[in-house]
Structure formats: structure tokens, C-alpha cells
Amino acid sequence: RPMLPSSTVENYLKALYQAETTREERALVPMGELATTVGVAPGTATTMVKALAESGLVEYEPYLGVRLSPSGTKLAALVLRRHRLIEQFLVEIMGMSWADVHEDAEQLEHVVSDRLVERMDAMLGRPSVDPHGDPIPTANGDMESPEYYSLLTCPLGTPVKVTRVADQDADFLRFLEAQELKPGQSIEVEARDPVADSVQLRTGDERRITIGTKAASKLLLEAL
Image (cartoon, rainbow, N blue to C red; front, side, top):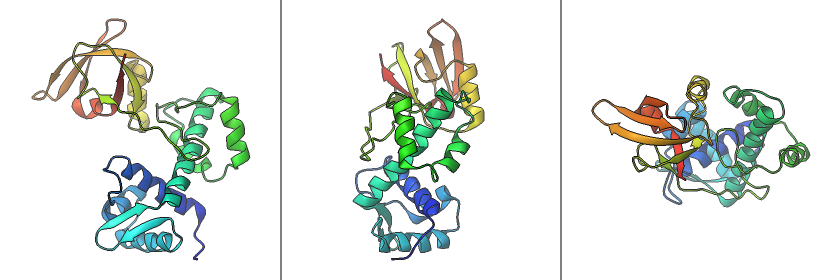
């Protein structure tokens, strides 16, 4: 089996894992999409995927795409576990802003030991989600995949709770923080206007906010 740099392998597996969670079960991820997500040329992605297939971590179907094997899925979930626990640790214990931890976690997820991750998990009280509301996989690689509403699909005039933010962009996270739309906040959608491309919200303290539909699609909610 070819020896591959572990951080590169982990980034590919994580990208596939996240692409697969938005698809039907066992669906193939197109190579072009994978290359774009990882930030490499398509030829580079293909070479890498062939090596991952030889290592038994993915199933590659030329011209169709690629999916994780069971062992690849477990490994990817453990990378996400490290990433999300590190983010939670940096926010909860180190006092960093939730808008600033993604890049640090991207670096650290490849180098922390299992023992350190276990200690972080224990110190944090075994959290189920990270600061952005993303579920943290278990040490066995299992992860809950709850059903969420978004601001575009939730019922109007009904209290809902912001549960998860599907975007790690620092400016977007700072915007949400300023508007008090972080996970845990209770809000109501008063109106959606497709023509004006806007969603009108009311917060728990009766503030009214209007945001665009693109931003609205990234706020995931649960009914209260």
C-alpha cells in the first residue's frame, strides 16, 4: 500500500464525509466537486483518490465519482471529532471567539494525539456539539444526523431555536454574533419575501432583523 501524508488523507476523507452527508445514502461524489472542496486540480484529486482506493479507504468508480468505504467513513468521522472538539476547547477553555477557531482547528486536528482528544472531551463534559452547533462524532465514529429546519423552511410565526450554523466564514459568524443569532437563541420568522430575497425575523427580546435568503439558508433550527 502506498504511504500517504496523513494530513492530506484526512482532508480528503473529511471533504468526502461532508459531501456525502448532503446526499442520498451511498451516492457517489463527483470528482470535480471533491477537487474544488479540497482546493486542488482535478488530476491531483484523481491521483489521490486512486491511492485512497488502494488503501481501502474509498470506492472509486472512474468517470462517475467516489464514496467512502466503511473504514474511510470511520476515519473521517474521527477527524471531524478531533476538529470539533478542538473548536469547542478553544472557545470554552481558551476563551477564543467562535469566529476565529476554524483555521486553528484545521491545523491542530492532524497533530493532536488520541489521548489529548480524550482529555479535552472529558474536560468539556463530553459535549454533543461544537460552538457552531455541528454534532461531534463519538470515539467510535458514530454521529447523530438530526433533521433541521432552516429559516427558509421553518413554520412562520412559530418560536424556533437556532441550533447549528452551516458556514465557518469568520465575517458571517461575527455578523450572527452581533445580531444575537448564535446557537441557543430563540427566534421567530415573521415573513419571507422571495421577490426581495429577504427573511424577516423577530428575536426573543422583540428585535426585528431582516437578512438575505442566502444567509438565512445557513441558519439551521429546531422547533421549541
